[in-house]
Length: 153
Image (cartoon, rainbow, N blue to C red; front, top):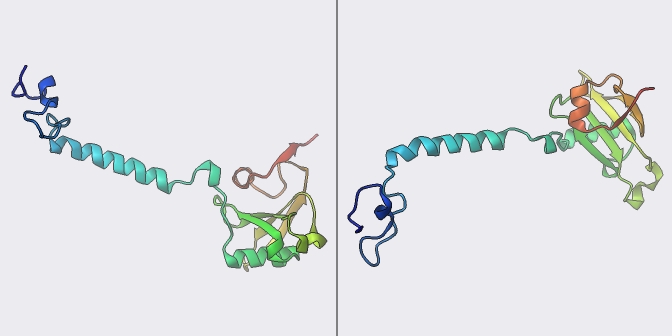
């Protein structure tokens, strides 16, 4: 079959003359590509805006970091802090064990805080083996902050 064959057939994929670009999409109209492109753009936008379960918790703002450090009585440089994206009133912290300047506060485990109405952080619970369900902390926040707990019993 020649390059002047039926529209959309196999011959539409072959260039008519030497040097002409390959018309892979020759049989597809531009109007039919617009809805497909719009759908792909919408899917991409939703995918990028929804938080994945891998990074649901977030780093604290400088103000949150200072507040949690003040409530813990430990310098902020010695802390690893994460704030829940499910309920931003909850945060957890643990001591960074790698810094020599933080040796005085070295400890194992995590501490969970809840922000009060006045903006100050309040201690809720702490430990390296916290029993499930975690006291005073909603289960969705426990999952979001990835607090590991051991079954009661």
